[in-house]
Amino acid sequence: MSTARSLTALALLAALLTGAGGCVFHHDRNAPGVIDVHKPPAPRGKLKQPAHEEPGDPGEETILLLPGVYGGGGPHFTGSSSSGFGAFGVEATVLYGQRAHSHQKPTLFPWLPVLTEHAFGGSLGMTLYQGIDDTIGPLYVEAQYSYLGVFTASAGYAVRPQDGQHGPQFSISALGFYVRSTTIFGRGTQLLFGGVLKFPLSFVWSR
Image 1: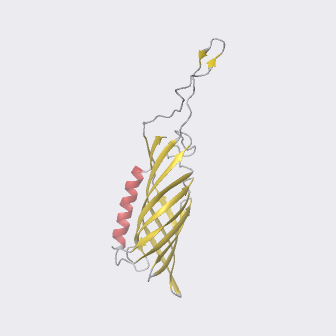
Image 2: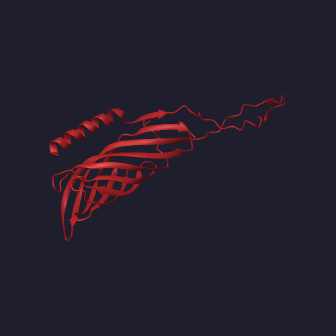
Image 3: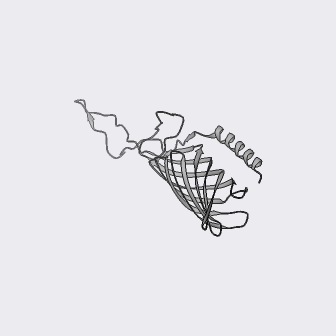
């Protein structure tokens, strides 16, 4: 794949994701409210009239779909030598988490979903271009843990589609910046420093 075609594909994908990003879909099944139907409300005042009982908040469950793009650069180590390279690609992440309170909205950016404190899921991605040999990079899959939606740790495996060479991959990120280590057996280790831009799609329902 040529550099021009890779850049065109990346630009088209970014345009599509920009239009869809930030959407929140609320499922109305099990609307918020937790009460004990077998226990009558406490009486109110001298009239002994049943008091209005405020239902408890059951919280929410959420699935986040996070397609996006990334890019960066760093060193490539092969035996006793090293060289620099740049790379960019696409990645899609799916995360599941729970929230203690329903219908929360961010104060600063109310159109974005509120991210859960702890979330677990996985990512599938591919480097569309890397400067090591001016070709596409590996296809990879990772298991991911996310804290507050801004700190992540991932571990997975990468495979080069050209020749099937493969090896382990590890990533950490904070506030959109990441460090990724990819070792392809027989080809060395890449250490990639860069940034990632994700476009969240959130599906929410009551617990």
